[in-house]
Image 1: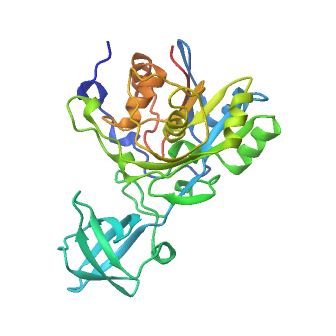
Image 2: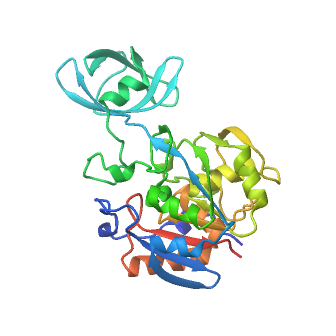
Length: 331
């Protein structure tokens, strides 16, 4: 019987395994391979030799907005604003620094006003649009990365649509050259769109993880992808938890179909997978997170725990700038 207690999703991670600087080349990382009862170790570029003609690999084509902006209060103090999404009233944002509702401040030479909504998020009102924000903004790197540079690595090289506040980290390992190499081998490369929200960093707080609520995110699964997956004669590989959640949403209640809308599905052990995904490529995730619970569900809880212990022992890097694993579906 599955253990849904929060403690079952916790583990101790040495701080030195949270990589702070990306590799020089985005494909330069370790790859752990979980295949049935075996764990083997390789390098990420080995994926090209593990995929064959007519296998389908699915990536997330989203890119990260430069939504992190520095502001100046009327008193001269500085604040940091992370713009999350637009609403009818303005922009929902997170603010680092003290500022009260009703106060004004300046960003990029423009005056704006701050208030709060019923969920505690700050609402920024003023003459703002995404073009202006991105023109003066920076990439909103994860909170566990202390060196706040605009790493080129953190921008999805194979992405085509900007709209996320966090990167689909499994896709970050793929270069355009690697994608072309896969296509030359006859591997069918397809894309979904999931606009990653700030909730991807959110730890589960409830003692029973099933009480956790996943933030809503917008997705698109098109007819071309559905047709390719239906014709697949080999592996169907989801690159990242965002792709897995997109395909599972589009497969409800039992068969993959085109879908455009929102999802807030929360996948944890006991989940009945409906999509035809056979393999998952993903990074090593944050403890007490919905990302880890999805990996438990797909890869097998005990097998993943064993893999994580071995990853720590062999000094794999975890989180957004870390190494990767490729697993088959369990059992």
